Amino acid sequence: MPELDDILQTLNMIHEECLDIRTVTMGISLFGCMSDDEDRLNARVYDKIMTCARDLVPTAENISKEYGIPIINKRVSVTPVSLLCGNLSPAGAVRLAETLDRAARELGINFIGGYSALVQKGCTLGSRTLMEAIPDALAVTERVCSSVNVASTKAGINMDAVRLMGEAVRRAAYLTREQGSIGCAKLVIFANAPEDNPFMAGAFHGTGEPETVINVGVSGPGVVASAIRRAGNCPLDDLAEIIKKTAFKITRVGQLVARTAADRLNTPFGIVDLSLAPTPAVGDSVAHILESMGLERCGGAGTTAALAMLNDAVKKGGVMASSRVGGLSGAFIPVSEDAGMIDAARSGVLSLEKLEAMTAVCSVGLDMIAIPGDTSAEIISGIIADEISIGVVNTKTTAVRLIPAYGCKVGDTVNFGGLLGEAPVMPVRNASPAVFIHRGGHIPAPIHSLKN
Image (cartoon, rainbow, N blue to C red; front, side, top):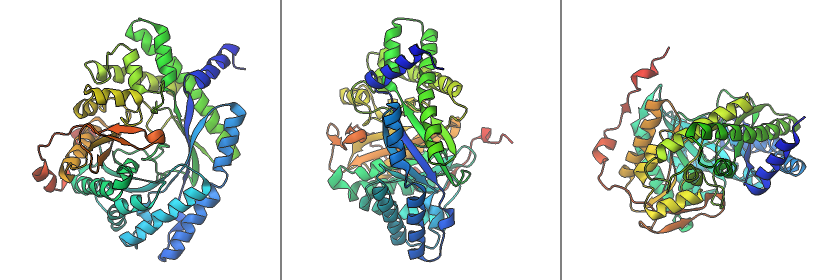
């Protein structure tokens, strides 16, 4: 039986410190939906999603009411859609995105991920078709999220794909310009993409996953920040222990929800992703955690070291709490979704270059960053290549979600609303990498990829 003190602490985390289950995500395999006939393919995809996920939203809502634990998002991820696109035109791939969007809307889920391609070694016909369709697909859908894995430590970096994705980001920004270029907020470019990630926009149902699976993402930046403040001016090794113990408690809540949801949906339990995922709400910021550790402002000297310690302590505490930890698991630093990051960017202390350095030690990468709308596709590709190389060389997941906000310049603000928040437009170095990007080809895998 849990101790009374543990129960009271958990209740306080929920009611006072913004602890929530950020997402319950059902992964669904679409391999059985393949067809040479476009109409039949769309019908099968729609029917499979509607059948498998029909009880996802009511089940999650019932669990939330029973346990008093907020469950913010209910989501679906599917097999990388590029695997179904071999016989489709780009227009057919856009139609498939509309089918996903219709299913998501009728199910009442927040987002559906998996409009994705894995091209770290090269592009199949289906992958190229999907990549061409991404900007148009994101412009005509509301809930579809897209990702492309352009690199891995084993394969190196597919620079042809990096170039194409720079162009795709620019076009998505233009096609959704009336909505603050929000299409780009639903597109992420990866290195070493995990196949069991429950968080959007990068979630997809990996080829090694079961027919269906339940993955849960927890979040508790406010809980960790409160624990640090209560600790006072203690040594950093003591602070690391406090963060570990706090992450343990957060992850146990996620484990409870994940197992309960899996049992009620008669679906295998996959993983708990113990990432600290911030929101624009006051008291729910990773940047404020770093500042509560003793930094004057996130982005200043010492930020990367503080983030490295935080990320490591969160992972250590979470792993002790669940035998099924996966996904990204650590600390997220999306600028638009974190009140402290927004303030630091507006003040000029937090720069794109500092964010890149921070991504070497955190969970993801350059995330939800607005840049001037006239930034060229080659510069966007260069930023993608820089960030992806950090993941490849360090054998970790990194990602890029840039928003070249159409018609906006440095100092403007782009407002997306909800969990996506608002993003101050940050400056970008204008020295062009065009010749480098247009060389194409592959950047070879690093020598330490040969571990067999």
